[in-house]
Length: 229
Image (cartoon, rainbow, N blue to C red):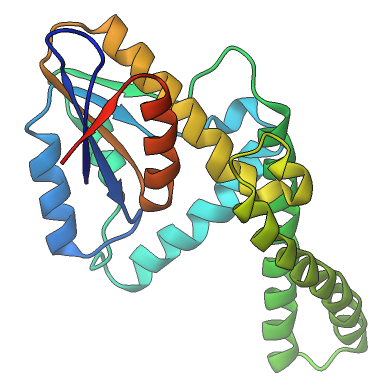
């Protein structure tokens, strides 16, 4: 959790909560308790309908999460973002809404959708070969393994892409980095917009994946906000 003061006078507070999108009961209860304290809430929400292959990427990411919750009989809980969106009192704002979707975000969505299609298909073929000794499955798995290996080798470029993430061209080194960095910027812009549009509450809560916190702080401070210890 990080707290920021807005540049206005008197300053208002923005409380940024970095979460794991799946969690156990105690963490889920803490998240709901925090949500109930705020009438103005901003949430990370990937705009899948506006991003190339965003719908497919959303399914590929959320389906395993739902399966995990099912096989643990509900022991694994959902995101605190879901709790914030379900709360009736006050306002919950999707921070990533933008008039123009950045090209880097389209590229990241396409890349990761293809990566997960290959990864899940390869896993499915491996499981099928356990019960079916078919040559066609073996041939398909062999061909797909080569594609998967190419993706895995290319993932090594995530290291220089992440190290150069403050630069606008970082996504050209590896498109996947944009799924964090570009969205950090969109959420910071969305937070500043939310605070302008809703001037009454003295404090607001912002909920996002924990990996976004550092980049979000950098972008929010660049917009005149200051970190409160």
